[in-house]
Structures are given as structure tokens and as C-alpha cells.
Image (tube, rainbow, N blue to C red; front, side, top):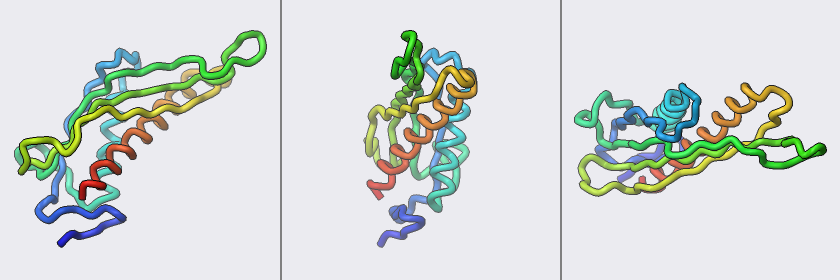
Length: 150
């Protein structure tokens, strides 16, 4: 029997998830990118399911692990005077999802997110907001792929 919460059906015996720190190996230059991703992932998995956050792998029924593998902020469309009128932030996160009772992960693959912004308005906060949107896309994809196994 499976129990369903907010659209997520969780297998019996899976009550906790451990989400270790996702290191930023992308050389993004954004010092808090890992923190932001971890906050978004914890929010998604804890607030959109009945899972509790475990403080260690030993206490967890499921583990979501990975790292930020690439980050780019590039011109996306060129306007007049050959100036970029839109930039695109692209982020790739390599991640795996494992039930601790199993030896093999349910999945182990890259997740991509991207979002465009206008660099002429406020390039710093524009890039930060675009990065957050890309991280949200990635967290949503991870959550959906994890719950599709439930």
C-alpha cells in the first residue's frame, strides 16, 4: 500500500531523506550557489512530501546526493550595437537518488536548468535571480524524478 501526500506517493518505510551539501565544482564564482541549491532542495522535499530531514546517511531512508558540475552566464540574444540584450544562466547538477535499503541508486544523472535575464538593467541581481530560477527548475526535476519512483 502506498500513501499519497500532495501528489507524492511514498513507499512504506520511507520516512526520512538525507540531503548532504551539494558542492559547487563549477567554478561559478557565486560563493553561495551551493547554499542556495541545498535550501531549495530541502524546501522541495520536506514541504512537498511528508518526508522528514535526516541529519545523517545512517538515519535516512533515502539519500539525495550530488554536486554542481557546470555554470555559465552567456549572451543569449544580441540587440542593437551588437550588445547582449538577454543573458542566459545555465546550471548543471549531477545527482543521485538512493533508497538506503538498496545498493544501487534509483537514478544517477545530470539535471539542467536555465533562465534568461536582461544584463543592462541590473546585471548582479539579474544573474542572481536567473541562477535561483535555474536552481528551482533543477530541484523540481529532481523531486519529480524521485517521486515518479514512489
